[in-house]
Structure formats: C-alpha cells, structure tokens
Image (cartoon, rainbow, N blue to C red; front, side, top):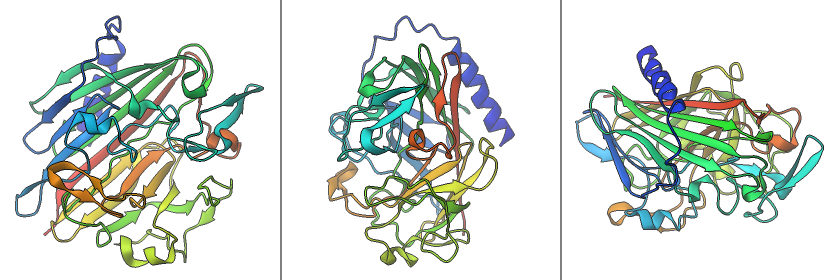
Length: 357
C-alpha cells in the first residue's frame, strides 16, 4: 500500500506544477486506463468514472459500476452515476450558510435544500484533461476545473483537481482544491454505484458489508442532519460486524442513505468499509482520509437505462461516498469544511479489489 500512496504523491506534485493557461480546451470524451489487472474508463464530463472492470474468482471480467452507454446520457444524469459532486457534496440545509459574518445562499435543487453543489455542480461541467497515461504499471488521468466566484452561490474562485490512478489491484482517487480569493466550503466526493456481481447482475441486497463507523449523524425527514450523533449499536445501521445489506433494510422507509462517522482520527488514512459478493467472490476494501462516509443503497433508482441494455431498479448498486459530514457549514460541532485563500483541500481514497474462494 505504501508504494501505491507514494505513486499518488508523485502525481499530485506533477499536476500542481502544470501550466493551466490552456484550460479552456475541453474536448469531451471517454479516457481509458489499464494496467493488466484493472481497466477503467473515465469521462471528463463531471470527472465521472464510467466503468471499472475486474476479474471474479474464476477470472471472468465484469464491469462493476453502474453507468450510461454514452457521454450524452451523462449530461442528463439525475442520479450522479460515477460523478464528482461539488463544490459541496451531499446536502446543505435551507440552501444557505453563514461564513465570516455573511450569509451565502446556494441554489436549492432538492426542495428547499442544496444537494451535491446545486443544479449545475461539478458533476455537470466539463473538466480539462491535464495528463493522461493510459497504460503501463501505473496509469493515471488528472482532470482540472476552475470554479468561479459565485458559482451556484459559493464564494471565491477555486481550482479543483481529480486524479484517477491504477496500481496493482487498486484504484486510487485523489482530490485537491485550492481557494484563490475567498474562504469557501469544499467537500468533494466520489459518487460511484458499485455492484460487485456486475453492473447488470440485479440488486446488492445479498452483498455483505462491514462499515468501520460506530456512529451516524441522524437526519430529519429531508435528510438534513440534526447535529447529533447516534450509536449504531442495536439499530439497522450496525455494520460493525459484516452482514448482508438486506438483513435489516426492511426496517427503514426506503433503504440506507446516511452518513457514518468513521472510527479513528479525523484526517487519518483508515479503512472505511469492506463489501463482498459471495457469488462472484469479489471483495472491495475502501480506505480514505475523511471523517465520514455516506452509505446509500440506490433507493431512488427508478428504471434508469444503463450500459449494455441494463435497466437499473432500486438497490441495483451501492454508494460509499467518503466525505466531510453533510451540512457541516451549519453545524459548529461538525468538522469544518472551510478552506481559506492559499490553503488546500485534499481527499484521498483507495479501492482495493481481490477475490475470495
């Protein structure tokens, strides 16, 4: 793992030195990475992961993320397949927050609240491809976006970078942002929908999951955190020991859509979750350095037409979105998401794939 992380820091250094003067050149398309063990495809529309192809226990290759067939379909996406939401992922209650004595109003795109940055967040813009090494032992792609002062109501200009890279049996995602002119909240996430049996293999309710979080941030009827913390012990949210996703999902109104407080230090790189599909034998481990993870079971999927003729119904995929806590801008007891001018936001994720017989 140390080798994988060191490769990423080299990539981070390289794109921090890139000349951004050509950043208006933005052809939209799919970009492939392959190292012989994993193959992924990314589009610079929304810095989106289109496919992740890995073997099962018999060596059969499958694409294990939900998505669309064409770039054009992603431009009309309402469910954030594989996207990079921002400037602030997840929800902002009342579509407003106060910072340095000033109230900022963000675009309300989910009732009276802001979801994933507004009606045109980072998942709905064209990113510039800065670097693309498509194959070899350590292929990667770095994408860049300049968010302008006032975009969707957020203050200040912001330079944002996302790097996807492969090393061995791992996919890493590194996110970096620099505030240029004003203090601003930043909370970036990866919104991939995973189905380890294959993107078109049915629902994920028989998948086994373990989440390394002993508390959640409970929410109101609009999925806005109350500001309190709740132990998962004895509740349907308790995945401290591995169990199937469907084991207690019937006790919830629609399914899981909740932020877990990951055990460990706030900015510590730590294991977040493990997901196992018994039929294919695929095991996915997620590591990250943010304090929370949103566990979402695709409750709102309603028959979206996806890749290879697939139709994705409710619970066709699961999301594990490592993040700062939702609505942190309105809760002083939550870890701050404010980035001051000259400071940098960093978020590092590592997905490790293996098979279990």
